[in-house]
Length: 424
Image (cartoon, rainbow, N blue to C red):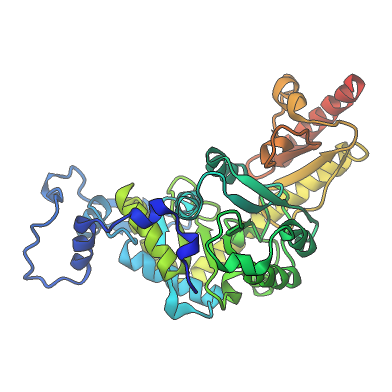
């Protein structure tokens, strides 16, 4: 596949950092190598010697002095090698990418960091950009400064509609996308599982249809999947990822450990075609150099201690917890919001996407009046490409609150909606 169409001039202008490239030689360097190329601080001057971190099961992760040096020293831009090995093994097991020999992986400072760099690599101001709508607010925050011409694609309870995607792309001819034509969309952004904010997941049939459309129109699929491990159901029954069906080399997949290990460690990873991962790596070399070393070593040691079985045991417990949270939230919604709102039961994730029946726009209701009722949500307009238009939707997060708080919050919300209806 020819990727020249997808790489902006800014990204093409990026050159390898000589220091960073030479640093990579240290990974498998001879003990006799005298490395005088980089300004690496001497670990003898680091004030930290060792650390022990207690896990919830009572076991401890011990960071002995050698590991502590790895935690505190500069590392390879692609990621801490033992962690990269863990993540590649996990990716092969879960997704079995058909073009694995031509695929690479880079660790980033959370998946949002990787997504931001991928967009900078492919998008220039004024481009057309195809995306699910509603769309994750963090992605829109990346996109809005580019003053893009959005190509929004609607969905339903089964995720993005393939027929809506074809209709949205109808103004262009597929053959035009084979050339470097400026106004032909190059990218399709999608949350395939437990979509943020709707909580719905794409069916397997629709995934195959969407991949075929992307192939017809020569689109790169940005598969942003932070809730992969927060799907409600047996992992054996998860629908296949776009990466798992990528025979063309047109999928960049963004994974996150924020929802299953810790949001504060800021560890994500991007998997995709080597030429595109290389451009992201060059950006990483010039920006943060690499993801946080302490976080990378900590996660790597945790995965080593757990082993594969321990990791999946943990992710299963995460799924079970959020499933119980979802059930409590839906029960509270049924009790307090029936007749006032409509919703689809989330298939995963942390959110309930509510449509208010008789309030044409939730923006002022939420931002100006909800706090007085001791409840706060996000108005639906924040998830729309054109935020000048009204939205009857709002997003309620159930991840952090107790079932008792859900009842109180949604009862207060119901009162707010009834009051709002008198103002319309």
